Image (cartoon, rainbow, N blue to C red; front, side, top):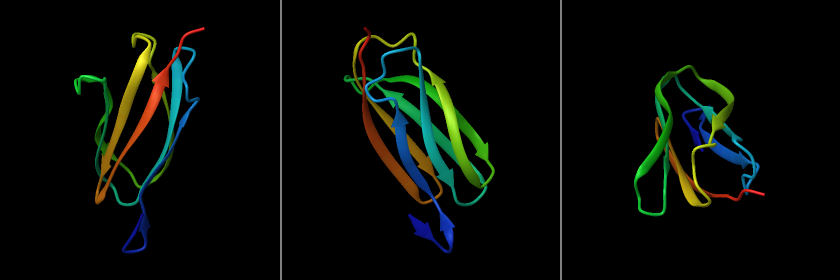
Length: 94
């Protein structure tokens, strides 16, 4: 998303499906400001909140520990500035 020359994006969840305890979120923040990332389960309950703070503008590759999540489908919700994106991911243990 391009807004006043500033880029906001929520690009990837890697790997997807998640087979180990760690996944990475790739996103960018266009302007310094409050950023919130929440992970919801299939019952729409927040199960993790890896980010809830002011982030500087820039590109991020955030590792997130999902080891305590059970097998299933989850949604990762990203809100920063004018950008609000949601992506689905699957936790699948080997």
